[in-house]
Length: 447
Image 1 (cartoon, helix red, strand yellow):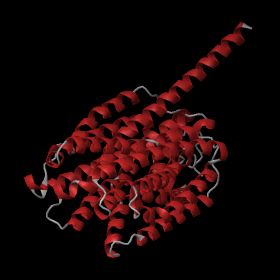
Image 2 (cartoon, rainbow, N blue to C red):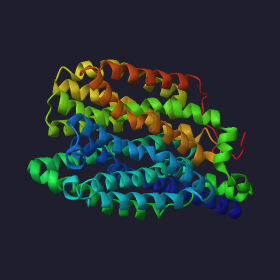
Image 3 (spheres, rainbow, N blue to C red):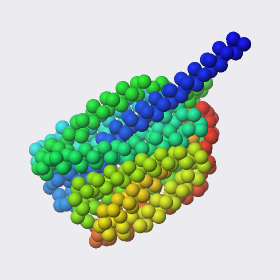
Image 4 (cartoon, rainbow, N blue to C red):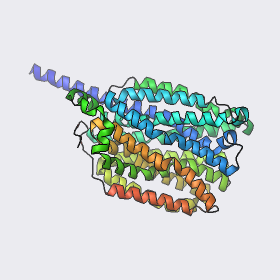
């Protein structure tokens, strides 16, 4: 009887330890990634409003805006390279070590960005340094995003993976809120001259302290059970080339997931980057009001991400994603007509709904991607799909939107056509996919 009691106590302690580590993992992943996304989001906001004047003043207004948004895309373009390199290293050496490296690189590049001289001070060297740091920033985020997702999902129990996935989905909108709130506050406290001189630098410099907090939290998290199972299985030599495994055995899955996420990625950056430029430059909305509208929309996005993850645990990943994709298609068709009414209340409502349903899908993305690949290639396959979509449509979307708006003399319907087509492609990729809910993550079969 005593032996059985001791066994029950030991099992209970192991369960408690597992649950505690799962909570630490999701906290470390969520907080750390939110802090990194803060730097990335902050750049997106200032690229659409301030950087054209400070770093590309020799061009006409439209060209300088396009150049500034192109520097934003450069960071996204670097993400696939970061995804490949960090994905391979993460599948070989583990998730935890890579997470500590990427958050450190991200923090350093953002801090240096806050110290950059402007074009007026050093000429062409200013935008050159800006783009270089942006590329380093994107490289780090390319490996960070997927690593954090896997760290949380692989620690979670099967019945709560969707919920943990939804918690990760709040990172981006939370960072958008922090970025816009900081700029909203600074632009209100400082004169325009002071804000353009040094005010915009303050959040970049302060973010380094926040990144240190992220490193501290992540050091408290152990390696994931799925990777430990792979390590103990003796099959790690097969993971010596995880990129080769993905390209040989799982390329169809990677391609399908990439095409799926092309829709949410494009819509997300259309709303959080291009919309601010459209509201302030085309509709005459004050910058402070634009920041406020984006904060409201991102609050809705947090609710959407949590709802998506939670619902996917109840009805399955596929059905929940189809619901979210259909809703974003509807929002896509009504978005610009409502913005053009120039009603603050209506604009806040449609931006909130559009970004909320977009992030509803992003809240399911981490768990869906993780369940679609075996352990020895999960980091690489997930990172390639996620970053590939952001490269193809996420980063270019603000640039394409500005170009189309200019080409069609201020009419947004060409933008609607492009975004609607990407949304439809996303819906079809979901419909063509299998349900993954309940898939065991501790599997090592390559085909």
